[in-house]
Length: 283
Length: 155
Image (tube, rainbow over all chains, first blue to last red; front, side, top):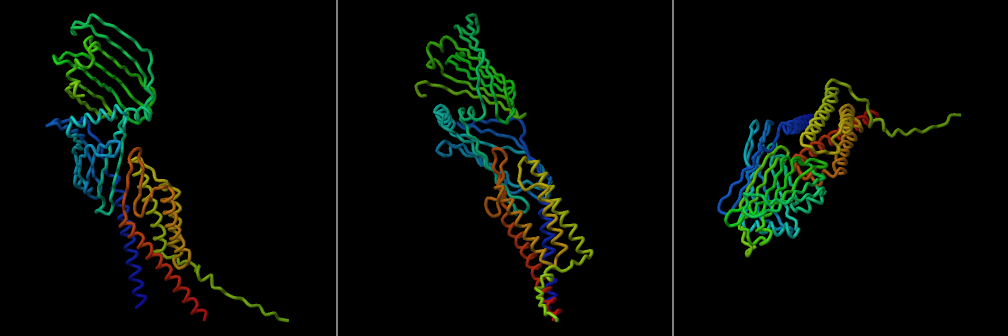
């Protein structure tokens, strides 16, 4: 009797071992057939004082198991850890043998308040943090995965950690013959080089900031152009054009700023533009 | 003049009986290492795909565990089997803890540049430990039976 029990127990343990080994091998093999990535062209939507950035992505699940309960949470936090904005993206279940294309959204609201906080944070050199957290269940919910990343967002931090900014060959050019702008303009062209220590590959980067009067005239233009930013030394150009009215009256003559940003990060192109009304008494 | 010599047989050899080389045992000894090699190869490929590294995911660890699996399968009735089994488990946990990957029970943490990834598999780990404990107890039980059977035969 005891021998029979022992044999049965031995068989049960052997079967359990075989099943467990097969299950673990199937999980590892299945995970190799899952891929994900970002699709190009971020979309922006503006509505009632809110801006939503939609980042398209894909997930290819050609493994054996469903990927369940997929959630992506994006938070913008200030230096005190307070959450300024939070967006929860509930992706749900990605069935085995299927491909999902969707968007990760991040919404900033209310826009004006957030813009003021962001500018104060940047000018006073306080750290903002973009915190991303993704969670999912895999293999019949036997495995739970959580991924977190925090990216600091101050310009000084980025400069200290990833950039060495060197200024070469400053050139001044005064041009009184511009007919498109009614007054004389002062133009600076500042070639610079950047020693970049980061891992992103940035190409055709252009950041323009235009200052406009109430009549719509362009009073000032700041352009930063980087044709390529890769690991190591890179060349860039800063062009500043100042109208006489801006140079003499200062920001009091400005009623609108237009920010235009475009470029490609690791082959992923983005473009963003925004008019920001400006009243020097309020700011 | 005859001298009386006393010999005390501690019976240590009963803890290391000659292994029975049947087809089932040889198949088990072949399959175990193959499973370990397949598992480590796939884990290595997975780590390369997602650009993370776990210190123990190398060929040396796979070969070590394979050799221990062969010993465990062939020397089932001897003390070698549970020793090899416990050594395998010990090596695995030692590498996981020393590499900093196993931060708490059932949670592996890996760093991929700015991303921190936590993989929780507590329920699966409990089942693995239960099966390993059952197999170890089975081995120990067989050793005791052999020792008792051997003692009875002596008497």
